Amino acid sequence: MAEPENPVASEKPEPVRVYRHRLPVRVWHWVNAVTLVVLLMSGLMIFNAHPRLYWGQYGANPDYAWFAVGSTPKTGFVRIGETRIETTGVLGRWTDAKGAEQTWAFPGWATIPTGYSLADGRRWHLLFAWVLAISLTLYMLWSLFGGHLKKDLHIRRAEWGPRHIWQDVKNHARLRFPRGQAAARYHILQKLSYIGVIFVLLPLMIATGLTMSPGMNASAPWLLDLFGGRQSARSIHFLAAWALVLFFLVHIAMVVLAGPVNEIRSMLTGRFRLPPERDQEA
Image (cartoon, rainbow, N blue to C red; front, side, top):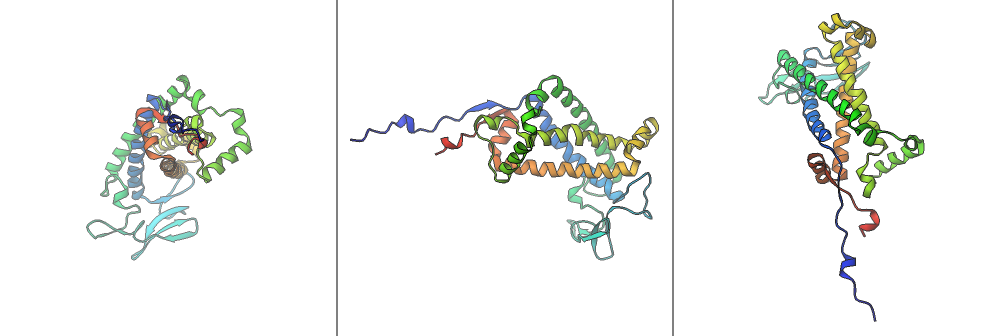
């Protein structure tokens, strides 16, 4: 005679919630998200004033530009080196909401302000550049002295192993995200990307932005030597900005694939629900 099923044993275990993100992490995350969006859109407005990039000290229309967004009487295009890509309707030549053709590099929906105004674009950009610089400085100090760097971002010796890194790459490619207690910790790819953004890309954006300032050229001319001139600094600034956009897109994709409700809730409240181990899901 079969034994009766134990209803308690058949129940799924209660979800485990842990305190994953401390308040400074959450505040900086959302402030930084808004700040970078405004900086990108106002930066594209500034770029529209001269949509060409150069290497070296100087750059003007007659000089060779390694990157350019432009237009002909009928088309829009992007040129990278000697490679030209037609972008009519998107970049270089596009139609605005009123049905009028425009020849700015980036369309109005992607810029702040939406109508062409170099002065307003610079005002928005400078204001939020200060927000970025101050918030990043405070966050870096807190990460160092508050234990965030040691507790969450420190890469341990075993994690540097090529086999460990490659396994993490394969797990992400297969969408096999960490489960259980492992999901509450940053894995190697997260650590590398967060360290790269916080301690490399964002400081690089600030430093190259300062290098493009005539006032800083007078007070700190060594910046020009460091980056090889104002035009080189402008090119690096542009490339770093799009590296941040790429990071943002990958970050959003990972949030969606890992479970957006749980991930966003943890960044709002700090509380994160641990995904159950795979053998507990059966």
